[in-house]
Length: 165
Image (cartoon, rainbow, N blue to C red; front, side):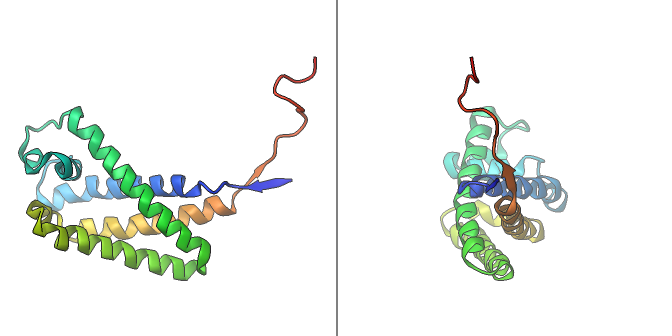
């Protein structure tokens, strides 16, 4: 007998989306904006430490890098949960479209609304960041569908943890 992947499928899907987002940003934002390779991580770190992280020396310190990745992971999991619930409750294509629209709304909020209090976020506006948000949503929905449909075999033949005598 097979069992479905647990209810925590959003964790894997959210983290997969977060990795794709960072990969797109790390690969495409620096060449298009002429910024350091770790620019997106500096931008995320600036949520805690302020805009000085954007002009810090070339190597971003672990003191800022770890929290930046942590902040990004929390956002990825939160949005992953929302996107996965949509994928659970809507037909697949509607969930995909709704997730992409929500990702676009997050992009507008992050880089147009939030810039009223964090003006340095305006520097990340553009095609690379917009694409990263869309791919983030698509990855989460596809990963969740794949995890949800995955059937794992149940362990057989062992009645308790230590086996028989």
